Image (cartoon, rainbow, N blue to C red; front, side, top):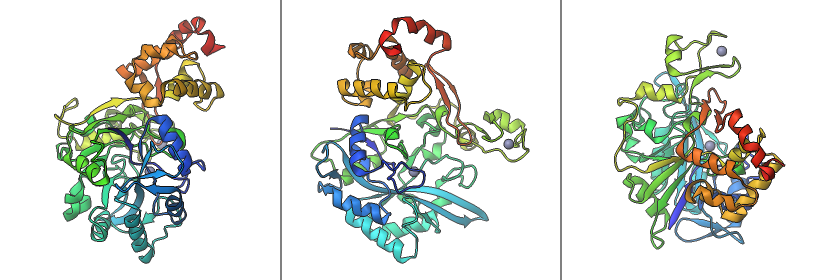
Length: 424
Ligand SMILES: [Zn+2]
Ligand SMILES: [Zn+2]
């Protein structure tokens, strides 16, 4: 069976997260997106885990489904934790994803953290004042099936390789516990090819997740597996990730990395955006405010790379770069917001007709889309271009998302007269 897994999302209990993030809504939206393995997220939060316990039923294989829900979406117990501590005279801020084999083990971890005096109520993604290494040792002592995956490894502020508070290698961070690390989350601002330039990362499975703080962002990055139905379980899933090849792990669904919020360097407040070569010329100093620039992902990858750009690593999962369907629709009909009523109507019509978003973006022949009432040649052309990567993107920087353009103004104008439905 094909499993589309998003292993990093959030509940409504994490900071800056939508109040809509309830289990019934997660179930519903995962189905709309085409994700069939999602995380309950934030399992360290006492109120949230109680909701999970009440609303989910155990499928007996490490996965859970919503009672009275679609039963097409499996949930896995994972959470994200923020570590802040000093190491080698530098303050480190690193985010980690923790995977638990079931609810009981998740609760045991919570109890242990609670006894150590950590405030788990404060946020769905609590801050722990201990090192990543010590935490990894702690979870392995609780249950060896608890696993840790470094989150969005390149983001400047909160990641294992981040320019502001990270490390230069996995070993520098995890020391003797590094042997338990088998996968890394590449984050929105990098793709597998950027990571292949660093030979010391070859031994890790590279996974991609949405880190969604709202329902619409579920699955904006994801992982696609082919798993025997009889074998489908937490243990098999971890085994496949550890195997680190493309036998069962087929491909990741990726953002165009330039669209990520930290691809380039710059200062949001100064309206300064720079590519790495320009940052080097300026010695990392903002030409406007004269303070240190926020160094982005592209720069950090270049800094740690020991291979040339374009290096291909064999037998690894492939990757497909995508733009979310509602953003594509918004550009086609010339509106700024993906929240516009017109966009939502067209989006819902398409999902109703074709099943889910990934089917539309990845699986079906775009020409089939012409059969939908709400769609014309412009959307067919847009999806073809996205699949081919024929886009113009102004890269993101210092927390600002990159800006994607599929069509020029002139092209959009040319499509207009034929689009009576889309433009009425
Ligand atoms: Zn997160
Ligand atoms: Zn500045």
